[in-house]
Amino acid sequence: MPDTAAKKAPKRAKKADGPSRLRIRVRAYEHGVLDGAVKQIIDVAARHNAEVVGPVPLPIDIKKYTVNRSTFIDKDSREQFEMRIHKRMIDILNPAPKVIEALTNIDLPSGVNIDVKMM
Image 1 (cartoon, one colour):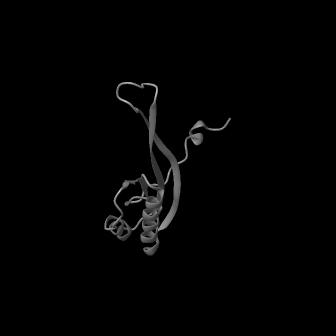
Image 2: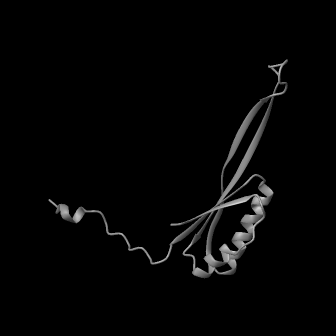
Image 3: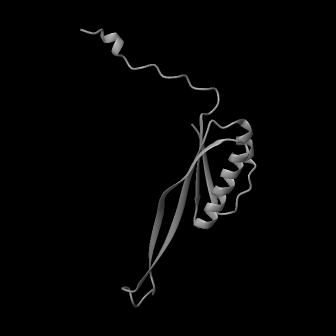
């Protein structure tokens, strides 16, 4: 019968001092503007020899709004509008401080939202 102490979970490697991954989520209403911003981010990371994973396309958020066409007479006549939010995710593995500094100084077009997480 084997010893039960030997079957414990394996030891995990210790975390490094800096962040091991930089996860960037980019969102915009127009996919063309979004793809241009993602290309700029990847170019900056590649210029500093960072390992880039992505861009990974995430599901599109579609928000639909239904509005009455007429205010008083014809209640059955309605109009629908929708907003599409396109999203991409980029991972930068083992980013150097120069990469993080270069990404904070990048100038992106208006209408592009960025969320950055250090994991």
